[in-house]
Image 1 (cartoon, rainbow, N blue to C red):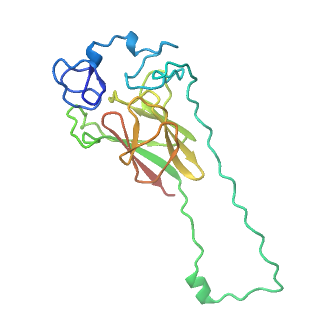
Image 2: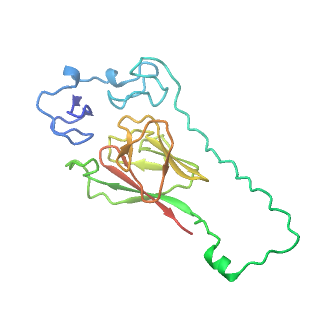
Image 3: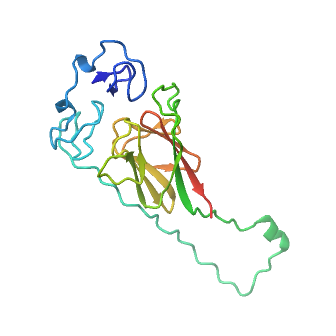
Length: 232
């Protein structure tokens, strides 16, 4: 394995297989060639994504502090408590309502979201620098978020994903989760090896962040995910 200037472990020697940055000749990770053993969890022997990964995706082992842990559970959706509407005052008779009052103060109608769609595409300039390894000819894919908890990750046999990402080695097997709640859509990074960006801002792992229609999620080396709230 070879370390690129951005500190990714690359499978290729000329350009980083994760971010596409050019690698100078002889530039090795920590001065040595990585072995399969150095990229495995000492607690459960699971494959480690890269030397920058902090937690094991299987058992939660902390590579930085060398302490065991538990797999990151997916927190159940939190349903906000219903708002308490105060009782109306007692009236001795109907209050007259003028046409001007109805026109000036119409009753707002909240939009009803029928579903959320995640549009997955390849963006060779996802991080501001052109990545020549990005498969730009790959067509867009649209995934409808039917589940309450929708897992996003690298397509791997035996791993059930609602948003599978193919041909992007920078995406972790269980990268992030999209939660559909009454308050809207939320994204949470699951301690991925290379992190998750929402509209260009790096997310803190384990923290739920609200997502609006039109927001863009950046994962892996070139995967762009655009969210769309589809009205009925």
